Length: 594
Ligand code: M6R
Image (cartoon, rainbow, N blue to C red):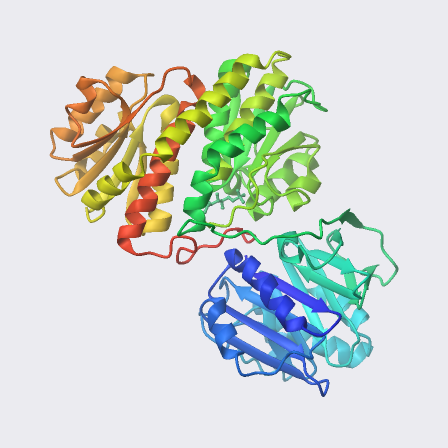
């Protein structure tokens, strides 16, 4: 989940790597570091615990302007504490490396290296690869060959960028972790990174190497090799727009808030993107499996309910981390949908591979074009959410559900999208109205942020957004929050209800009376009720605080509308808590380890 960047070319290499790291900081922010070749050709290393700003402060008085080759890293710690020593790059003799991933057989390899006399400085698994590489280099005397030999010895998913004092290029290789290289022939530069976003504006052509392809980056060129040293064509090449404007927060205090407010416009764009002819390369399935993690999984729960009702086929909703190890029952005629914002989530990718290996057709609902998931499936449906920078996923959820809704209609063989189109417009309009009620959310948040715990409850189509609401609140406000099916509270969790507990009760038109009774049960035990539902007195009167919504006409899309209310509430509670909303502690945006 770390971010890695490498650059070779003209001067100002470090500046380009630092800009790349800034764009990748969503991948981890435990520490950051950079290593560059200085004027005398020596490797200079700087690294610092904490966010990137600590590294840039450290570099303030360092003259790195003439450097034309550098590697950088932003860390999400896996092996070893968060400290300067465990930060990347790691340097040994003439070699510096940055790493994203996990070396699963690190302990075993470490014993061998220690026995051979390698002195470890850090607690990281990364240094194991550095040790292997340096021993291989002593024997092979060739960096490409040494990289290949060392890489063959490690297990797990990893991507590395390697810089050597003695080489006129930088080398990169990966297996199961995201990596993209890019070249700018005019300026004579080449770059590598964990995400194309870090390369935008710097290079004009990008290459996604397959696993086990070594990329040798030189000024203005990249050569690809298989692990046996022969030239390789196992990569996907794409042109990249060079006019790039980095995403900014604009008038908003946080990316998360900006992304919440982008939703109505994105919904309207989705209509433009999809409500034409939808090319389906796939047959209508007999059964459907929907797989994802976190917010993407909850989006899948909403999509699954819609597909089951509309297409009358059995749908199973699966957490990728469970699905991949449960030896799932997969039958001929099954189809598997993988939902992911990043397209790089390790568990989701492994689950997709399992389906593919078992002969099941797969498709994605994904945001990042060219991502590993995008390249692995039989068909892709892009959600067109734009770059999502806030670690807490917001607009991606909405776009994932809506994309799933559209594809469902295509599978139903309905060529007339007019009524669905109207529903989408209505949804964007209602969300716009809700976003104009910021004061209501601020007010409620100010009254409840200090309570002891939060239960989000809902039934039927609102159950997944109760789960998603609780996830959002806990990840950005660091408070204990749970999502529950409203009818389940009395089977245990109700024991927790007292005057310190808040129930965010989602009440839609579906199962209205039943959900109302569940609220009464909480109220009777002195729980504080924040109602989200239609403006009717039976509901408003039992709520301590109330968020009125207009559900008419939205039907199966109404959970998305409710979810925006949850997003705003979580955001404003987190603001009161004073947390780091865009980069919450312990998290990373793209979870590329299992
Ligand atoms: O990139 P993905 O959609 O595959 O990521 C899945 C989850 O890691 C992600 O949704 C996570 O739960 C977010 N932090 C939620 O806000």
